[in-house]
Image 1: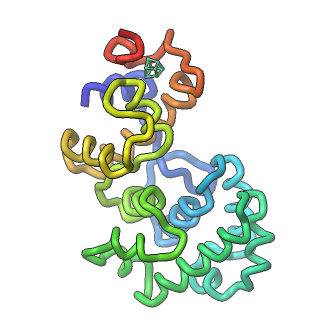
Image 2 (image 1 turned 45 degrees about the horizontal axis):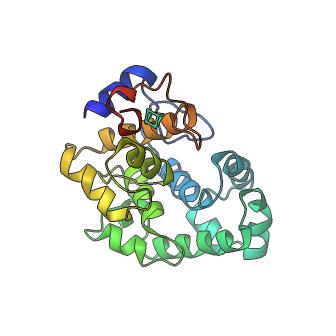
Image 3 (image 1 turned 120 degrees about the vertical axis):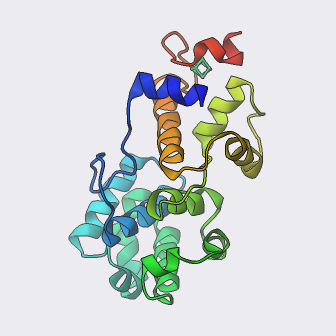
Length: 218
Ligand code: SF4
């Protein structure tokens, strides 16, 4: 919570997840929730910049829609998301995801599953980070998302090794933070901001808001 308050005071609210490229507070519609799921899959192994163009293409082709996504030809979908990299694999993943959710009728009903995380992890192409991003940002349920930035910052901070296990580091946050999806959302978004501004591959610690507590600085 100490780290969170420092980052929040320095960077302010981040308003994640972006919808149609905009970061702002909002009540999520069913389509917004689907856009987040699609973005979480498309951003695997690529930067968000590459995902934005792919999402624009999907919007233009009315593919932020479960049925349309499930039914479109995989090759056509792959072309539309080419800029996001690994596009053939990702087209397959998106179609499998849409077909899986459609078995439940809607994203809303799918998100009501008690074993939602296990259910997501059972879908081909969805690993812990993607599943947790979907649960936190789209279903708005409290699970802490661990990504490469979180591992980098926490290892430099002195909390873990740089190759820490996903669930071990996730447990660290779950044990220490109140179980609140808004807090988890903001905290993860602030880590990403810190990684972009200060805790880069070569860290720029001089203006880092948490440098006084960081092991790397002591
Ligand atoms: S002080 Fe430096 S190493 Fe520590 S979190 Fe900040 S930028 Fe990263």
